[in-house]
Length: 322
Image (cartoon, rainbow, N blue to C red; front, top):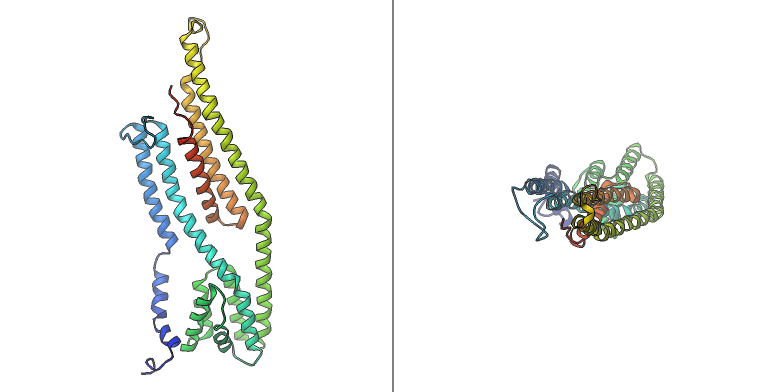
């Protein structure tokens, strides 16, 4: 009867423990992306090996035949399956958390202002939950509903920390919880925490703005490298084959004459492909780590660079007929 007569915000919280347990016991979406991408990558790498040894004859570029190039195609596709889903899913999660953290100082200041009017910390949180804090609003309303249901404030804060498990939120929750347990003027503590949180966010934004220049330089350097490799693969290598075939069919190729080993040109092209793959993954990871210190952002950049480099090298460079 008590539950039936409770307000709507309180009745909603009846299902909160079950939902929280399901989330805690389940596998996050980004881990599913990593597992699924790993399975797809393994299958594509097996096809690459079978293509290389001649068991399969699957060509993404018709007329090229089996060998190292089709194997490289499936190797790159497998690598993209491995890094792209996890990189984009994890980056989306981290950006959502960043948007939640962005409004955290505003919420702490509102709670502090409510506390200055003599409200306890749970009452202040409930009153502040009526405000609008972007993506943080839903999490605040969950915490307010738990407090209205009678959940201790320390438990509600811990559950909020579990839903948004970032170092910034963990530090804020730890300070607020200890200040509330110690008693005294919690409003002053909340004000200082809000100010410190805002300063941390401003420092992070300043770092990202300064690092954006280096990320731009990395992209420019990579595309300059791609253009250089493309010119060598599309112009220089075919000319080597033409010159070698001309020398082989001329009188200079007789006994003691001049000869050009143009049969090794495909190996040079393979070396160019490997260089593009290594640079794409390495430069992409470096760009992400420089920008925000996270590998997931780097995998996103690596996916973009690897896709562009592979498409240019495999579908824009002419087929080398030796």
